[in-house]
Image 1: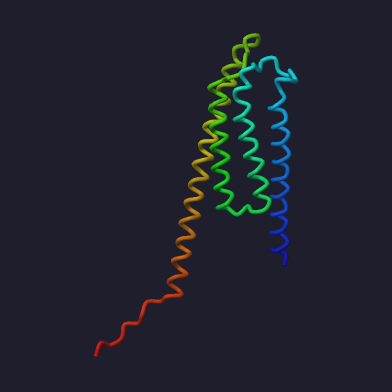
Image 2: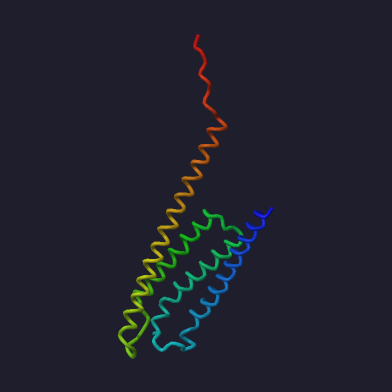
Length: 165
């Protein structure tokens, strides 16, 4: 009985985590879509408008995925959604680096280099995450195929070879 309680607790904990991720992504969605109007950062240029749709799409995809995880966070289902969300995030991050809507001319030149470096590290990290999810999905498919083969062999034993006389 203790094992059942632990399993429920882990699932509940994961669901709380998905809820927190939804809330954080919603807050980020509001910030991304209003930050230029708020004028918080003088180094953020009007070119940021060019990347708002992609960043918003990536955040919305993450929100939708986390809502789905609350209902079903089985590894295969979650892996598929992670591939989709990470792909969208990768596209948005690459576009952010291409547009580079930041003007650090009034600051130390270190800021531009640091920001570009952070974006490149993010692109590499998201790419690695994509590869990891892909490998995990392949392993799940292989494991399911092996299990199905084992069940088939158990339920359909080879026919006994009798005497031919």
